Image (cartoon, rainbow, N blue to C red; front, side, top):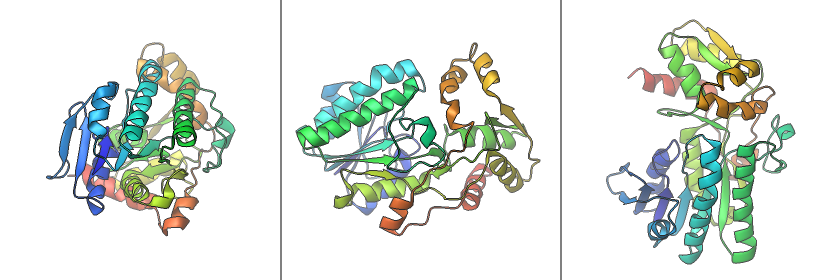
Length: 308
């Protein structure tokens, strides 16, 4: 049996479909889980509750932690360490392998222009420090307690039916509504995006590859170096619209954040948008002979979904 903790998100949903290639028993765990496949087992659980996580993990061979918390530093600092501890403890208790779907927040800011699995972990933001704490918890459990785990790290997500990715929200959704697209800080900088169907395929493959464990893996991401302007132009072209856009400057984000909490949360992360942000997945691509979806094809699939 393979179990997804936090099964309703951008990766959890397509991952549930992928796991049927490897197992006939997929368990989906969330506060209010919903079936993806007809055969899915649903378990309702609060991942901050140790007993509920233990019951959710019991009987699992592989556990995928794909949960997405509210984008709030207070929530992250309070809940993430608890969720990670509960997950590690349950995996150890039931001899389950752990696959943690991670992001790039823990990398040092000067690594962002070209990120690899060897990039330094040296965050300067509060959110980044939370992510670094989670990584250390996993590394400690591997070294000291014998946990079998791997880190599946992604750049910013985009893809069909992605509700939270900023490319979907600020470009696709805006253009669909005949509004100006939005970009953060500097639209002339390179920015990598990981296509969610690629990410789900890769996470399932990694979780079922024995020699992939106790390593860090960047999930397959196009090596094309597109800027924000490139994305806006190509999305507008695919949607038969004018490529109009508005740049949310760092100053504007700071001022707007005084009134809108979600914008306030973006302020500390602008170092990822005011310089090139390139995510290198060549390790995974070479190991598994995988060619990531091109941005042109990814945009085509999202527009096809949007137009339904």
